[in-house]
Image (cartoon, rainbow, N blue to C red):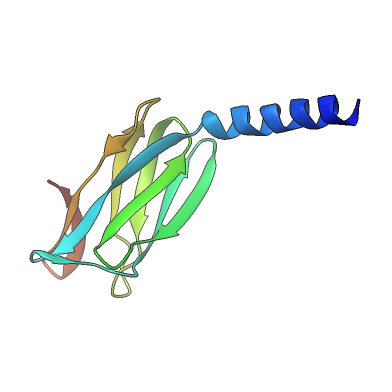
Length: 107
């Protein structure tokens, strides 16, 4: 009986994590990867955070629908509205300095 209950609980946990949508991509400035940079994604289902790897790449599971990607870079927080769906989506960004303010430009 304990095995049956454990199996059901595990199945529910796996199913709930499977409902997340994945976004991934890279962050670069002047062609150089931005490594170890913090970012957050704000969705109606919650807030999700991560850090880019040594190559400026990121991958994160987020809620579905309209979300806002926020980068924490050089005391600024450029943002970009994105949409997540059931299938993984790639969002590659260039971080561009424009009139003293950093912006995210999708490649």
